[in-house]
Amino acid sequence: AQSVTQPDIHITVSEGASLELRCNYSYGATPYLFWYVQSPGQGLQLLLKYFSGDTLVQGIKGFEAEFKRSQSSFNLRKPSVHWSDAAEYFCAVGLFSGGYNKLIFGAGTRLAVHP
Amino acid sequence: DAGVIQSPRHEVTEMGQEVTLRCKPISGHDYLFWYRQTMMRGLELLIYFNNNVPIDDSGMPEDRFSAKMPNASFSTLKIQPSEPRDSAVYFCASSLKDEQYFGPGTRLTVT
Image: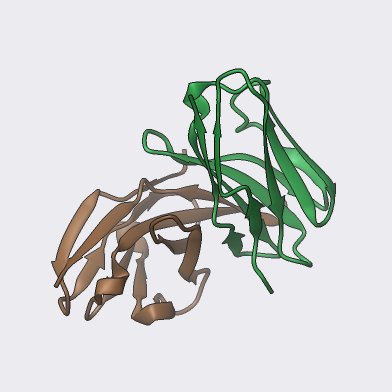
């Protein structure tokens, strides 16, 4: 069955430090992959997506992610974290069928940023 | 565009009462999704519509839950009767093609 694993429930980093959030997926074919961010009390905002082509994708707010087929991973990175990046981050795999992407979400990683 | 609009943002109700959550998708989007988010189960897809027609409601937990989409600009999710275990944040999302755009959610508390 298709699934998404985010191994880290909570991560704390210092402002200005680099960040990597891990995401592993289980899917038989090349998936559509997404990262969403959820700030407290808010809905989910799309950070970036991968459908095909260049395996390193750039997103909003200075985030990037790299698709590694051999590792079934799609890790999210940012070179220098800002205090405003504190939020919950969700990785999702899109199962494109019947004309739309059914999203399977990971459990999320909550990011705290220390000044 | 104003994005996906949900109302109310917060709802507190007593067990046994009927609850109706509302959603206005982004204009022009032909897919609409209802999700539920809880600490225990994370984000779950409840039901989705395409061109106002319900396509897959396999995620709807019980018959107490129902959803409608009478036109392209409005959808409702109804719980009747509500139970404390329905307490969660309910999100509506809409999409035209590959990306889903989420509303701010409705936080439901059933006491």
